[in-house]
Length: 444
Image (cartoon, rainbow, N blue to C red; front, side):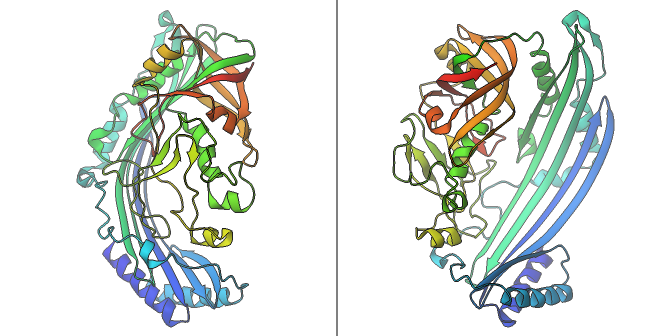
């Protein structure tokens, strides 16, 4: 990466010498190796190296963004010269600017400060990756009708990767982020005794290979598929809703999107004019913890180079921040913040540690383990989602259910929050635990 960094510095100086008033350059490099398996055999392998440079130019009160995958000095100089000429033809937009220097990250010099890089990745060979992929399977296929199913297909992928980004600008910013990632995922299809095909999946990821639960992934996918055998029907009505931590982000992401500058500025947010107001239940607290060492989603700076910090997004139901980059903040005449949250954490509530605790306290309801289809309206907050899951009776998981819808409005939904466990999956950048809500509309 050292040659690319030197090239990025040269390109910044060149852009300024060619007439750019200000500039920011972001260099990214990723290396990924993958082994895919299907029904007991290696099905595919992939080795991918991607490098790109994004160049943002501020010229005569105008702004343009350009990118190139050709990282060669002479070619980039011609590219930048032409890009500057293109920007000069655009309409003036004086609100475009770099962040104030005081807001920029100053502690991301090496890219390793957050402890997200696994040195052992250099020891991974094609043979080792192949062995991991093959040893993680539940195959060979066996007839298991005595257990109520036959394993029809099992498809999985193991991959490891390195991601490196380096950002500089004409105000002195120099920030780097480096991380490794190890991932595995399986999708399994079975046939029950009545000939129905049922599928499910499972996955895991970690910055360090030692933390990757690769041995259990295919087994968990198979177990989740088998659990769907013998679905029952549930009449439409209001039920307690319990949402598994694996899929709970489906209900949190729309809140974060609605707090984003673009949605707010375009009047396309159901949380417009909510800053500082109590909108949700006091049981809801969402924080951003982007500087947690060694954890997925942690970052010291955003795409503008602005330093991240731990902060409340929603505190006991009160909206505490919008996500406004420099441009959106200027358009809205508000103070800028970080561009977006990177490591979302929903705080536990109600003294529950696990999903079992939540089910025990809720008693009866429907546990949602997956969403399939549906939509939400970003302007109104109304939603309608297809779900799959299980009936819960007396705190115990019972009959599987499918082909049901939950409908409502996000503000109303989050005011019906009753419990939040402490079981968020470490592989996710959104640390969202099992959640429980009361009196939610289900339609069959």
